[in-house]
Length: 72
Image 1: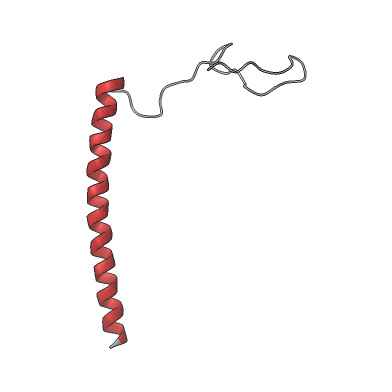
Image 2: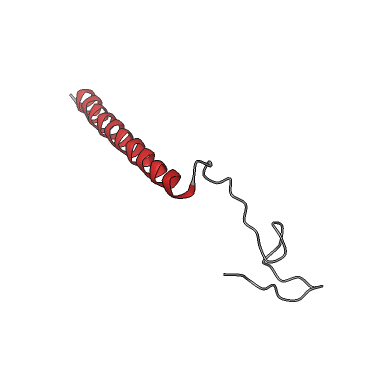
């Protein structure tokens, strides 16, 4: 009896997770469409951040230059 209950519980949980995964994938697709409409068709995470002295500027203080200036 316990093995049947375990199997049934597994099946219920698997089906619920599959349904949630399908819903999440749909929501992610809609979010990506909205992102593309606002920011263009670039892939997420490919934009480079440019700081006060260029794209490789460090925001940490250094011994030679003193405290860094953070641009907001």
